Length: 351
Image (cartoon, rainbow, N blue to C red):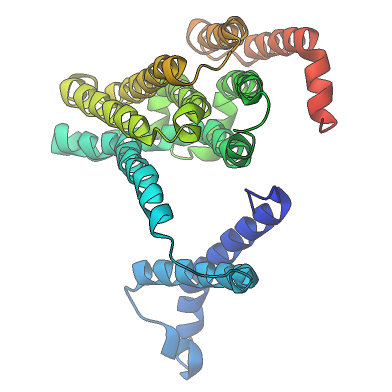
């Protein structure tokens, strides 16, 4: 669906999957125990099993995936199935490094939380990990944006790789990402104290709010990395993607091991930022060698610099003062509109 540029159908299928999964989780975990508690026997009591929560979650996932497969089954009946040995070898050569990169990426995403519980004293480890995980949640705005952008744009990267001037298009797409990402970075930082009330309910966790801009910036760099990674994907040099991700994982593990005992979750936040920044630099410099893309570095550094600078002023210098933060955000949006008016109009009109 993505490759054939049917994003609306793709989105509907994905949203349906999520709704079914969520619906069955709510049924199994909340409603079914109440229905079975009536003690009248019948189907509800037969379905219910005490201490079966993890299994219910897996069953909900399985049902949602099965329904998704059923919705898409018509596509499979239209296919002619045959085994192509040469294609299989090419796919393995391309895909195995991607799998390794995925494992390394998972280490970057989750290993810091594991190390927090292992490297800190037992009496504070759980609380520190809780604070970190709760405030890390505010980065989901950047993560969701970067993920949605990647899902939408990756098919474009591949389908236009043999067009007349794909590199210029890749550069322009990265510019769009940086512009929009800069707005999200500053916007979430400005409204951090508002968002924490909604997403970090336990006030004891607010102590870790100082990591929010760091984690947001790390997620921003990860999104930029996904845009830059087009060079090794379209040139079938995925082994470089694996190397880059492994280096990022090593940076994550090293910084966490060295500094968690002294700096707790601050070390984890900075490790995440350092890992993704390193991956961006490696991808950029290798990309210039094997598949140079004419990125507008002046524009990228300009918008990122102002967004990061205003974020630091709003969050750390003016201590999250909402009025000053709003003023800085309006200044940034005004500057963006003045410089990118024509591009923004085209984007809004879908051109």
